[in-house]
Amino acid sequence: MLKKPLIVLLALILLLVVSAAATLVFTGPEQPAPDSHSAVWLQAGPYSVASAEFVFMDGSRPTAANGDYPGAPQRTFDTTLWFPEDASGSVPLIVHSHGVVSSRSDLEYVARHLASYGYVVAAANHPLTHGAAPGGPNPTDVVNQPADLSFLIDSELSLTGDDRPFNATVDLDRIGLMGYSLGGLTATMATFHPRLRDSRVRATVSIAGPAALFTERFYDTAATPFLMIAGSDDALINHRAHAAPIPERAASGDLVTVLGGTHLGFAGLSEPLMRFMEQPDSLGCSAVLATLRGASSNTIYLGLGSESEGIAVNDSIPEVCEVMPDGKPAHPGRQQMITTIAVLSFFESIFADRPEDRLDARTQLAVYLGQDFTEAVFRD
Image (cartoon, rainbow, N blue to C red; front, side, top):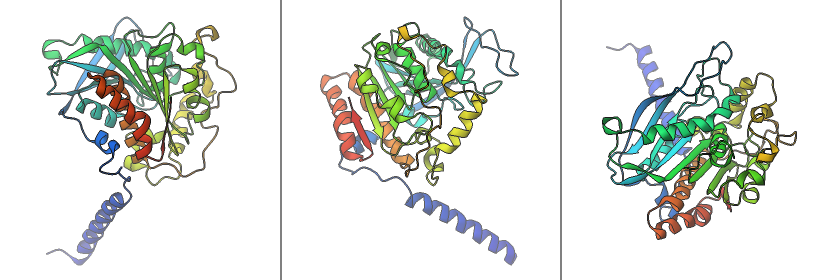
């Protein structure tokens, strides 16, 4: 027979569990109207999603010494592949690049959603910028990451036989990139950089990626469709400097702004963990500033290119966390819904098989997203 103190303790634990569950329910994100266009785009697609793990090694390029890490003669990539396990025929491939102090799973919620619609999505830990990088995350290694994405495209295309976990084949004319934060910078460079770009890329999404250093000349190297998704209250990557100029600088560039959106609000771990924080980006600021080790955040951009290549690094680019927004942050659940719909509808507007489906996707991105989510503002 249980003693009274133990019964009381169990009752308190049960009460706490019930209270926590109720809190999560009542503080959940408001869903779009059930009969709205956006509600349809939030539903999982027709395919079952599976994943597989790989380790790819690029023996042609070294990993630099970093802190107490002596470096290595190769670059090694722990990689996750999400795919539609029951798809056949040819399918698009999206390669995702993670942020600094993060990992390949930082936008898994988007990767799985894309896979349910027939996309193969690959994401790898970059050797020196992921959270557990040897010697500590080093954002200056971003100069090597566009080539990482090209290598990952090669690696996915080379999977054959029992090594390829899905039955479909990758369509060489439907290869896209997606990146978050420093990964957004990586994806942008792999799309437009005059020396580092991969001509196989047909569409790219940068989510809260740095872009203030890129001039109009930079985007003139390719007519590749480009979408920037950014939060108006991003403390790490200032919206006014990095995201707002995209529609004017990039002839093929679109912008979706999440009003009240924060930098960490895009990361999968923020929902539901950061629902109750007044300033979620304070955590990201601490983590990223630690990687800079007292240096200016603009040192990350040094060595990426010259003004003749459309890259201009100057003191007008705000430092990471130089401006801390003081408004109420958007609900991370709503922010991630907007991101999920925006990414899917953007890629579908380019990669969908039928013209009418491409038009429907474009209308969802440019019109219905903003109608169904008051926080979402689209500019082309």
